[in-house]
Amino acid sequence: MLGKKSKNILLRNKTNYISEIIAKTIITKSKLPGVDYCFNPYVGCLHGCAYCYARFMGRFTGHANEKWGTYLDWKVNAPELLKKEVPKIKERSGIVVFGSVTDCYQPIEEKLELTRECLKIFLEYQIPISILTKNALVKRDFDLLRQFKHCELGVSISILDKYHQQILEPGASDPQERIDVLREAFSSGLNTYAFLGPIHPFLTNIEDIFEKIAPFIKFIMAELPNLHCGNWDNFSKALTKININPNEYKRVAESNDFYQKTNNLLRKLCQKNKIEFRGIFRH
Image (cartoon, rainbow, N blue to C red):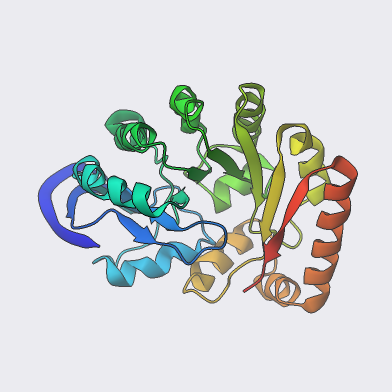
């Protein structure tokens, strides 16, 4: 739950701004499969992915009239709240997912170390955690993650072409950096997985992605594009920039044939590479 914003603007330029916010609570119950609670230390996301479904949150966080990817609020009192809320989570047990409607490894996290400070509190109580990110900054925290008895580290990747990725995911780490995260995390003994999502018609080469990440992951989850969350106008413009017909993209992405072929291919590749397949989400 959000509280009031402070007047402290950490950063403002022509394209985005970052400001402080004082939250009322920091852990919420999860509706996502396989996890029990959500932890979101930031509001918004400066990765600015053109297809992101989380932009709908702007209606509830005071950003209804602002473009997704241009704003970020950091919950300055998150560590203080965690010290009160984490013991209750410990009593109830359950897994906490880091970043259900944001990425906990925002570019500014390198300076703020908000997620890192919060990780220390979760570690003190040995709360089981699951992290999903598109930012290579997570490597900074491997020293903490290795100390958890239960920690899943996932990397989201669905585009290998760097030019396409920079148009569709302008603020995120590039594809090779994300692959390196998986490789280094796996080598250090962390429980790693890949989130192939969204799987784009005409853009996502699932077999090529598997070739690069299969040796470094234990399981995979996947997702088809969610085109019904207020993102279509912005996303269709981004598709046009990379010479993909938006209407054709949408037709294929929402077809049963695309779902069946994608699902079958993922199952086949997981079986071949002895990787657990935890399903594909369809909207």
